[in-house]
Image 1: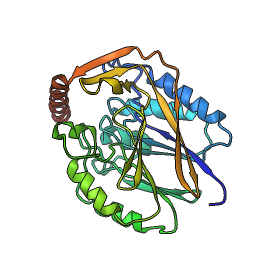
Image 2: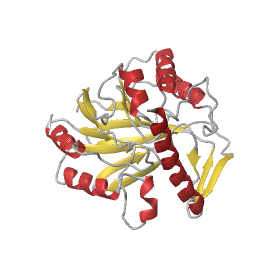
Image 3: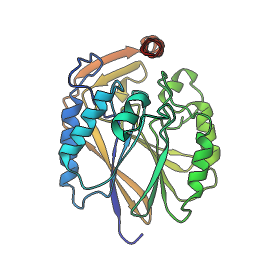
Length: 294
């Protein structure tokens, strides 16, 4: 690669339906996305592409995706934008609104693209009615076949849930790709060269890890920031947002985080016990709502 190539990593956009009051939306995510896209438009040189690693909307309804499309269109960006899905997304809303697709809308949104010599592989780790991530049957095989394509090109993997960094805290499995999925991913990537990194979100704080020799980059996103100083007690969400600017050189991938102005005011606090109850109610309520909607 003769010249350095730049791209933008967005995550956890959490765009809402402007016509509906959402008490679980803690900030003006539409305004944040507009501000970030304005920043992107000012970048020199212009990035070659944008990846958005899930939680595109807060509730997954079709109208929220329509709002996302409208904000993207307003920005008039001259670069491809590639999406994957997170636990707040719903395929039933995403496929019709974003892709104009009315059939096969229950399947994972796995896809790939080659942009300026980078093979970008986007894997849908969302599981209906679950907070943590997992692979559905056939996804690992799809990933394996995709990794075999374009063997000469460096590869970026994008998925909402980062692989688990260790398997010691089963109660925290919701924070990542499932332990089973993480092990399947490790086996799939083992011995392969050319993997630039894995780009993820979900946990709402900037983090870079060295996972079996592969950089794993997680971003805060645009909704709220996790206070990492509080993680020993539970989950404390404060005002904050960022995006990441990636650069691919012959030497590999580098990431620069671009924080947005924020006063770090407290938005929500959950103890560990409270998180367990929240997860249980979220998954139960989401499944019940889906049944009622049928």
